[in-house]
Image (cartoon, rainbow, N blue to C red; front, side):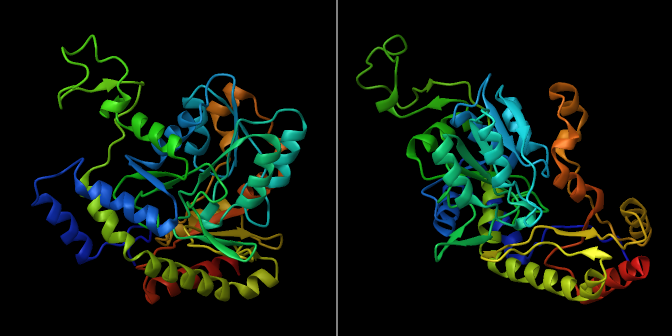
Length: 399
């Protein structure tokens, strides 16, 4: 059997035709497809404002800049995430830190966030990560933010399509119902893809204006917002159409119409992708149920009152498992099954150790998870032959 990746994109003829139609059009970038995709995302997930950008990492950085994270300000996030969840704080000059995870969700623990606040180090921003597609406890974090005064940026890079229940209502990850800002990622391993790409969502009009400004070089083209046309043009009361002003040091964060055409097409199938990912997770759980009962493995969480669009299937090795995680990883790879470790805790990375001297013992739950986790292949186009090969190979190694 050919090598099986832990994840990959699902592209159909409709996706290809959508991209080709843009290539045949007059616009390749900054055209109508960008606005169309922004509107579709905002409408589907309930956020008033959506700004598309080049990638999810840049989306996080722009979100931090929009809420004025800068030198002397503190941001905390989950240690079990890709480095971008913390790097965005550093890029803005802030000091990053972490709160341990909740073993029941593998997302940041609201209890640990509250402990952090009670020590007198109230952060300026908390960045919960919807790990593997499981929604973080956003309502609880929202309550803490109102009590302690920090902002919330939801890192929903794993969780487009995921929802959660709160007080009898369903909320979408990315809706910003319990956060100030949310971000999505459209990397090829995510639920939908634009090749590379990201989105920043918010219900705050002022934040949206700031993010949009920063995402396009800091350039302002609205005459009502010009601040200094007198020195630039003869008639400041009626500036010519070519006139613009740079109001901030922004970035070239632009996404192309080619990418957005793919995103629009992919978004039409997201409910199908979600159902298929959940189906594979259920089948994995059923196949490993006896191993879980015998404490050979620990199945991934699926918390009550959540409806995850699973990005990862993170199996953990239990106390009665007789093979180590790294040995299992190597043996699976020899069989062509490319599992992955998600993630090395961010505080373990040399940059964070050298720069911030973070003590590993502060994060016992993250350490327990990291020592035993392994992400198995999970993608919508997985066929039964591939699925059964993975199950048979893994069970043979575990048993």
